[in-house]
Image 1: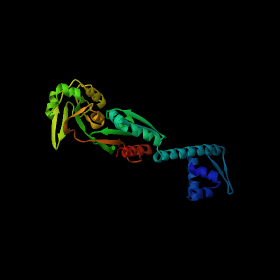
Image 2: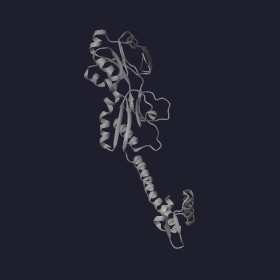
Image 3: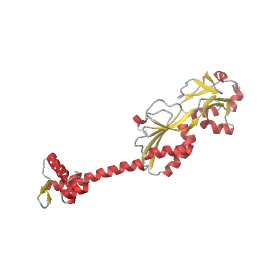
Image 4: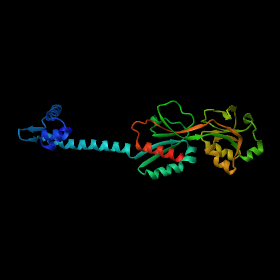
Length: 287
């Protein structure tokens, strides 16, 4: 089709061959094959000039439109690889988004106004490919997968409670004391009803019980602020409350193992500009 359009626009097989940087014989052969495929003559050939048949004229008109659409599609695909634009679907744990990423994401939208962010706030580990997400922020150990991971930082969980709870029930002196206290647990933790703490190379697993568990860290934090029990939560969730005295750290020196925070995306090959700029922007902001 491209060869045929070049012949018509150039006025001869020889001129089309120069334009396409191929031999005249190749141009003639391709037009002939096109006519055989269509089962009709497109060009009337004489020794001096070419003329279009009625079918050839209609086919040329539609071919120009089709080739233009193909070229435009290729340009759009290329621009989306080099220029950040379009919808970017991101899934982020709710509490981490609220405490760490809200202002960063706001700054990204101002820096890249042609990107429309569609953000799902959930602690659930979604399937990026199956559910159509471009990027996921994950906290904790990463399972084996084909996903690409960029490290954003680390976090540790600490044990804390409100002054009112500690005044009423006493302060645990060792990790094992936690089993005798009211504890509020994060239900999506891999430890379930066990809290795993470490200090100076020593590791302890403590079974805990309590009247409440939730799949969101801030829900547990609010219950702790109300004096409902002891919590084991990341510093990015309880840090401000500790600084303000609303919560008090229990068992200083005992924390969770280091929790990696990563941005995950499906593939580095043909990575779109919107994914690349978003991940780079968050990495730089959290450095």
